[in-house]
Amino acid sequence: MNIEKVKTSIKTRISTTKAEYKRQSDLHQKDNKYAAPDYGWFDGRVGAFNEALELLGMIDKSNK
Image 1 (tube, rainbow, N blue to C red):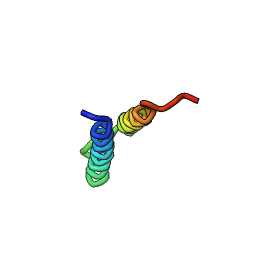
Image 2: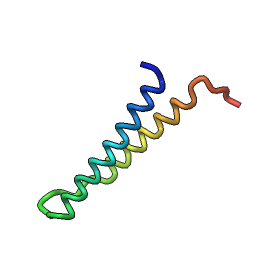
Image 3: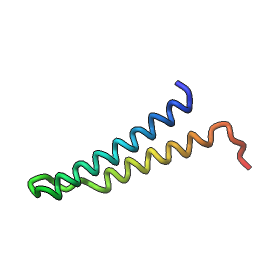
């Protein structure tokens, strides 16, 4: 697997994580029997994926 495929996979995970947060949030807003989504968990997950993208961007770059 090359770096571009990894980046695409990570971006897909970011979008599915955001979609799942929205789905859970919509369910909670429609009916309070559903628990509110854990914003911190979703935000941490997206942040970690974004950090991974940043690190992948640093590969083969000079450190000046």
